[in-house]
Each structure stands twice: as structure tokens, then as C-alpha cells.
Image (cartoon, rainbow, N blue to C red):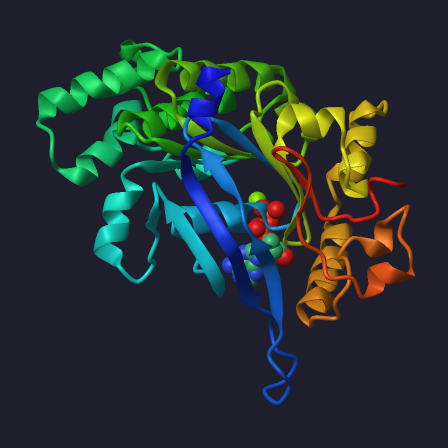
Length: 337
Ligand SMILES: Nc1ncnc2c1ncn2[C@@H]1O[C@H](COP(=O)(O)OP(=O)(O)O)[C@@H](O)[C@H]1O
Ligand SMILES: [Mg+2]
């Protein structure tokens, strides 16, 4: 318990009423500019050393929210804090320093690393860009990083393209580790990989976290895959956080109808593939809905799919309300469903 309250004492990443929007294509130069509200009024805290999971279906805004915490997406409203200090996208110099403590692991390792690089070059690149360490130190840090992900220093001279998808993701993880980042965003790190290696990569990420006390934002469209190791989580729908807090509490007592839907589909025979992996058409529908949402028609964004929706939901102003300590939901009707 002492350890826990320690862990919870300090937020490494914090957003306050954060919104990020993107302009939609205009139908004509005379029509009004419309926006997709990719992230709407999100206030979350990620505590030092925790694995924070961000879960929701494709297109709901997960990557945009994560990118905003890395200073890669500009807020249209609200703020992001890192280690208590505001991330100011316009202050390029300061942002560059702050980014030294941050890394991102992408869904597809092949697209985030040049396949024609040697492993050594791919892993060492963040250090080479900094130009602070001598060649010897870079070599030893690179070897140490590659060994910590279960490959060998003998692999350093081979080309990235010679490795399997799972091994390439290991190389990408080594690359993220080499610079000693405190905060690592893992953006669906296994969803492009063969199912047979999912558990290995997830276990590797967990082990690394235990050893190094790294703070993760772990993004997934699959609630089941985060159950094993998320300390805290946020469930996202149409740009908003609909449920948030301690992972055990959310799994034990899911409040929002959408969270329940995700949990039920995880328990169903297909492991939740149909409900959560939205097909491209559904994504378009989602965008359309996001467009509607952006036009500010009010009400709960989930109401059209909600099994417990009622007429009040058309005009309700949603905000996260406390259910119990470190457990919040947007749905005011969840408790007496
Ligand atoms: N650079 C961009 N320009 C325009 N729209 C974008 C951009 N990035 C994301 N979007 C839109 O914002 C919404 C959220 O996208 P994203 O954050 O990628 O969702 P997720 O990671 O949950 O799949 C989607 O509707 C997407 O089409
Ligand atoms: Mg994404």
C-alpha cells in the first residue's frame, strides 16, 4: 500500500480539458469549415511508473490523444503537462528537451524503422541524433539495449529487414529504450504482428517496465489484452473518455454501457473481434458521427448505440463523475441500470 500511494503521488503526464480537432474537407469553398473532434475535453493523469491503458475502437482518437501527450498534435483547447511542466508546442527548443524523456513504439515496426539500416544503426539513431556520447559509449549502450530485448549483440550487424515482424518490434523497443526514456507510448504494439508472438512481446514490455520503472501509455482496441498488466486505464469513445481509473476496479465494476459492451464482447467466442475491430465502413460511420458531434449537437456521443439510452441522453452534458475512489464514468444512468 505504501508503494502504491507512492506511485500515485505524482503524475508524469497530465491533460486538462484537452481537445484536438482536424478540419474536414470542405464540400465547396463557400461551405462552412467543419471539424473532426478527434479528442474532446479529455482530463487524465498518468502516474509515474504505471502502465496506463487507453482502449477504444479504431478511429476513436487514441493515437491523437497519445500524440498530444508527446507534443506531436497541437491542442485546439486545453493543456498537456509533462513532469509538472506545460508542453508548449511553439517552444520548439524546450519541447526538444522534454521529448528526450519520451518515446513511441508504433504498430508496424517496419514503417517506423528503415529496413535497410543495420540493427546497430536503427537502435543507435536516437543517440546519434543527440551527438553527446562518443562512439564507444554509443556502441555499449546499443549492445545493452539489444540484449535487453532478447536479441544478441551478434545481431547488430544484420539488416532490420532480415528479421521477422516480432523481432523487428523487439528492435523497435530497443530503440525506444536506448535513450533512457521515462515515458513510452506503445501504440497498438502487437496488432500488426502474428498472434503467436503477441504474448512474448507483451511479456517483454512488462518485464522491461518492472526493471526500469518506465511509465507506459499502452494503446489497444482490445480490452482483453490490457487486463493482464494495466494498472489504470481509460475507455475512449468518439474522442471522449467515458470511463477511467484503476483497472481492477473498472474490470470488477464496469459502469459505462460501452465498457460493458467491450467486456461482453471479450467474453464472447470470437474474442471480441466483431464488435471492437470496426470495419472500414464502420469507421466512416464513426467519422460521420464525429462530424455530427463536432457540429455540437450536444448529448451523449454513445446514445445511438446505447442499450440503456433514454430521451435525456439527447441533450445531456456528459462529464466524468466519481463512482468510487479512482474510478469515474460519464454515464449518470449506469449505477441504476
Ligand atoms: N492528421 C489528421 N487529419 C485529419 N483527420 C485526422 C488526422 N489524424 C486523425 N484524424 C481523424 O481523427 C479521428 C481519430 O483518429 P485516431 O486518433 O487515429 O484514432 P485511433 O488511433 O483511435 O484509431 C479519426 O476520425 C481520424 O480520421
Ligand atoms: Mg491509432
